Image 1: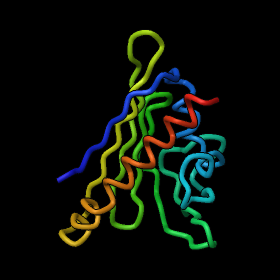
Image 2 (image 1 turned 180 degrees about the horizontal axis):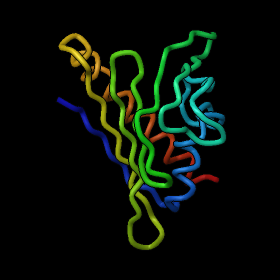
Image 3 (image 1 turned 90 degrees about the vertical axis):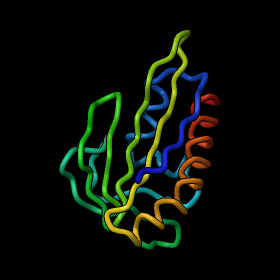
Image 4 (image 1 turned 45 degrees about the horizontal axis):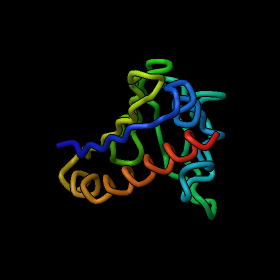
Length: 132
């Protein structure tokens, strides 16, 4: 079962997408992430396998599952499947939707616990997008 989070944003979808899909920019809105290795550049790339690099240098294996440029992408990070979607709203606004699900029962518990953090990080991304 997936845990979903969504937040609306005054920034246009293109600006939200750029922050979300460019690994070199993840550190701008995700306080625990320094970046990524091997997941695509400048944007995430479907089928790419690499690592998420956390602050302190910890590396977690990751694989980009699918990408719909400018719209959505999903990835496996350890035992979690995380989906991201940017939807346009009237007036040049956007909506950031994210969901987390586990690949096995223990990972489903982890997904439930991680989902609120994903929501918090999403709200932070929106603040950055609105500020830029």
